[in-house]
Figure 1 (tube, helix red, strand yellow):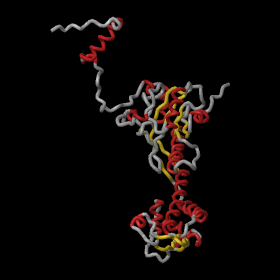
Figure 2 (spheres, helix red, strand yellow):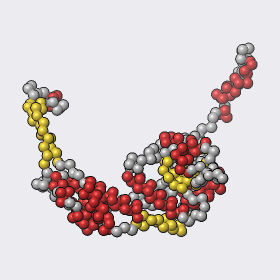
Figure 3 (cartoon, rainbow, N blue to C red):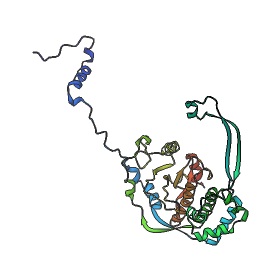
Figure 4 (tube, helix red, strand yellow):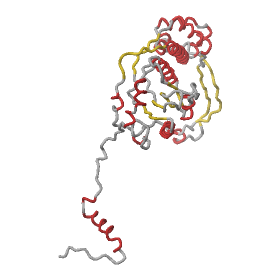
Length: 352
């Protein structure tokens, strides 16, 4: 048997090389594409931007650890809580809806299942209080637990409010407890932030936190490959962050930036806080060349969730404290909505 290939038709002879390569790819394993293990976990490696002197200078300014302390006068807290409850504690009385109706003629099983068995002829809303309820409420214990105060301090607050305000407890005990707890917690949180102070400790964050937790990231949220980021890619949490990264990466003012790793945490009384971005600007381009940013869709404190706002307030104090140890080019921290807002905050460099 002959193993030679038949001559190509005249119209294919100009493409002989391509035809033979195609035939080889069918019969030769060497021509097949290399198959890789699709289950191999993806990583987001650090790149040369991490070692840039501009990023290392920023990192040395922010990699400090600190502990917080809060000192406030219980008497002052009690008086502020009493004033808040007297002004804002309003309880909705228990409300009952009474309906009267008659059964439909020729009632069917299907009507019963659909709730159409009775025709409503009259509806009335009645109010009452639960003073005679068999349910016993531990008012003092519940409010103390919810607000995380001692029973003694909570008792002083409840004893100090106006009689008319306290009588609302009879109208709706559960609503009274919930609202009193909320208002007391707000006053406590405001005082905590006001009296919060950070003390720096000797320990610092190691660069290893940038390499930790590299596996298991959701690469469906990854950007395109970046040129100024310390990682090859940025894993973004929102469309706001994705647009922010695009603007950072194309900015002539930005030298290098990083999405801060999850292990970079600032302790606060309402839980640890992980800022979003560390950014180093080109020297001479802006007033604050070292910046830590939190990206949010709104600048309004009222629209931020309460716990988020408290963490941000604490972070401001943290960065103010660690900046005291730096003689020049202090780190600026703020919340920004986009790159334009960032440039407003860092400020244009004043020229002589």
